[in-house]
Amino acid sequence: MKKTLLVLTVITSLAIAFSSCKRKDTTGLLIPKDAAIAVHINSASLLSKLSWEEIKISNWFQKLQQENPDSLLREFLSDPAGKGIDMKSDFVLFATIRTNGAYLVANGKLKDDAAFTSFCKKVIPDGSLTQEGTFSFISHQDQGAVVWNKERYAIVINLPGISKGRSFENESPAPEYKSITADSLKIYGKKVLSLSNTETLGTDEHFADLIHEPGDIHYWQDIGKLYAGYGEMGQLLSMMKLSSFVEGNKFAMTVNFENGKILMSGKQYHGEAMAKLLKKYPFKPVDASLVKRLPTDNVMAAFAINFQPEFITALLKAAGIDGLINLFLEKSKFKLEDITKANKGQVLFALTGFDTKKVIDSQSAAPGKKPELRSYEEKVPKFIIANAINDKEAFERLFSFFKESDGKIERLSSGYTFRMKDDWFAAGDSANVAAFLSGNTNSVPFSDFISGHPFGGFIDFQKIIDQVPETEVKDSSKTVFLNASKNMWQNVIMNGGDFSKGAVSFSIEINLVNKESNSLKQLNQYLDQISKAYQDHLAGVAEKTERVEAKTK
View 1 (tube, rainbow, N blue to C red):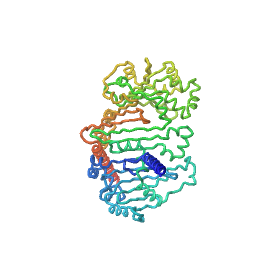
View 2 (cartoon, rainbow, N blue to C red):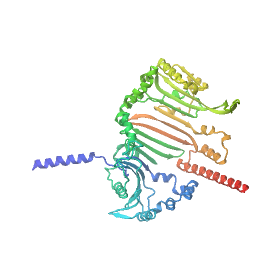
View 3 (cartoon, rainbow, N blue to C red):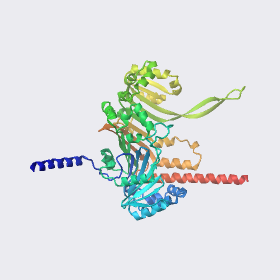
View 4 (tube, rainbow, N blue to C red):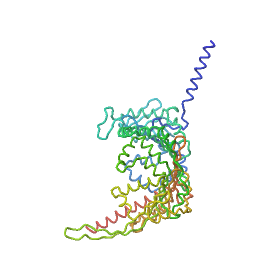
């Protein structure tokens, strides 16, 4: 008896241990594990920053309503809450790939299932409303179905265009490729609403980390599952030995609308193959002293990266295309390793403005006549590209090879300078090249933002907008657009590339001119101004056309 009790105790303990090891979802979102793409909308957070009433009175929304031929959709957009939907609950949109297509599903919570039922009958008047236990169903042929109970709803749309059953575009569909039925859509919708907390995407710790990150919008993409839906792509990746780099590759991003800025941050998770390379050849932080060699006030855009060239070589070898590249380089007596040897992997690019250049060329003329000369002005960019040299002799041989290759470099480099000094190669307009190679440092305001990480970038929207000449602004709508953009967008700063725990992180900060108001509210007002200006422009064109037509009659 004691032995029996002991055995039962051990079995029970093992069962409890096994069940506790099975990860449970803590997100509360009904998204299946096999979803390839998922978007989570934090409705309560978004509506606290921009109410539905503010959206409804905006010009762009009213125009959308007027031009929408679907009266039921107009009715829904005018008052979603009145149709039974809980506007302050989480809303999700996801896609799952199946053998003969894909499902696109939107789901959320209901506040009034009776009101929702009534609206569904109006939306699909020719659909038959059926019930199965606590679930209600209505479908529109084989294109889509709506499934709901007292608490939640799921809208399931059939996407037959994505298929694993086809290998190439010109191939006929595989035998199993067939249109999904309305009953299948209903069954899938019910399955989604019945998911347990061990069957959802929230059991993926990376996805759970994403959802628990404070944010207005969360975006998730499982690249391995996504490309599995494209037979042609999957076959190509396998042929190039790249499928191992796609497996386990997941992208997670959080978007936040804050006062005066839009923040985006996230991680690119990698599978075992890519993670192994990133651990062996880690990217290095960009040095702030490099960025400070740029001009102080003239930078319109700048990007810097610092990586180990050996990483690229190892990646190409793992992909199985190093032989093809070496075959291409064979005539020049180069190998892939020579390119790695020549470079350190630290690269800087900056756009600092435009110069006006007078161009004179000849136009073709009729037989027997001399060609006519014409002159015009064109804008040429002022820029700097700087590349850190590891082995000067190897780099000189490499650059000579590209210069002699069909003369393409010579044609492209007209008016620009190429110089090497110490362990740097610089290309661009002469002033930028001379300034960079001088080694002088400046007080560059964004240097701290884009240095300290393997990758950094900066774009000054104000300077870019100022480059639009007044002569090109020929109507009032363009003037409104430029003025609205000038008053809206300031700059964007980005950095990333740090690798930790199997993921590469990144951060993007879009800064607005107005620092006091929430960026979502400002974005709505910005769209409103542009929409109204465009409508006024179209009305003006129509009026002008009517006057011309009236005169010709």
